[in-house]
Image 1: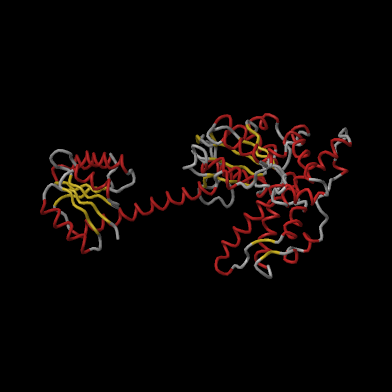
Image 2: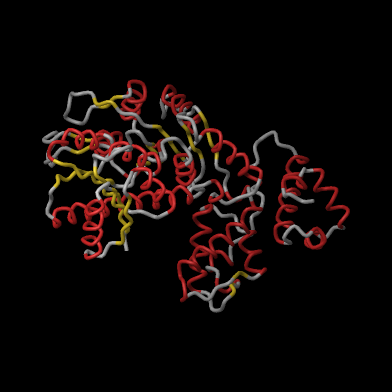
Length: 461
């Protein structure tokens, strides 16, 4: 039940209004002065304030200003006599929801109260959803404790509060859009839109209209004016995914937008100012694309103010168990009461840790979702994993992929380090168990952990 605060220095008005609102199903508090009203606001949950404008001491306008400092969204309706309309208009300029002239019909007042409270509920819900979204994209929602991921967190933390352009590079499925979301929702633009466009999802002609918008009649089928993504992202962030797929003509047009901060809709000639932060992502190496004349060098430097590289999952094996647990928790929570899965067996976890994960985090997520749905019991076992995962070779060294000039010593060291990380992951960082998995002594393992600085990277005491 909503609660309304009635403020009027005339006692009979307070009594009458309180009775009227009670009949309409509202609770109410009453105050004979602005100071008394402020005391109530500090101690009670109030959904709307109904105040007279002309009161001794603190006027209704003064009270309104104080209320807006306490809660800018709280609706305030001003009651005023005909001769004080100018004051009521002043109140509207200072944030009052509306004003109503005395004497008034009760039905008119109740209707305005209902509208103001409905508006307040919408504002509160939007704020709650915004807070939920921001919480969802805090850094700790990007899963990983490995050294490459710690480096990525550090970049996000430093670049988010700025307006700098960010270029995110990473293989498909590594989570580039999640990084973009984390940057936006931890920035000063977080209360404005994050607009995403996949540049690979549109033909060139359609992508231009999607980005710039078009005027009515600009081409066949353009039956109405359409705002483009540049305009939609005004004051917020524009995320261009797969930017390496942009054609050369569109690269030129994007560069011009970044330089001039204006756009022209397709079929239009009027410059429209735009203010957005640009985050771009690609699964290509844009430096190589520039060298092969497939991407403009000047645009590359505009995009690459700060580069965030997301490592493939095969290069951060120690994060696989964290991701497994995260996705099991996610999908069991979504399944609710119908779910019976509580965990995963060690053998199934070993298979997943050994897998190459060419599809990266997205592939692992899909595998866990499938396994949670189809698991025969409350624990995911190897039999619950897709055959292609069970039968795939373990994550081995790609000898053909070793760059020329990398010697035997460096290669063996990389393999040894990877095996140690795998063993520590499977053992839950229990060194005795990890040494057994590797077939070496505990002291030998301890020496190798220090040799590769893994004692610090894996947070081993």
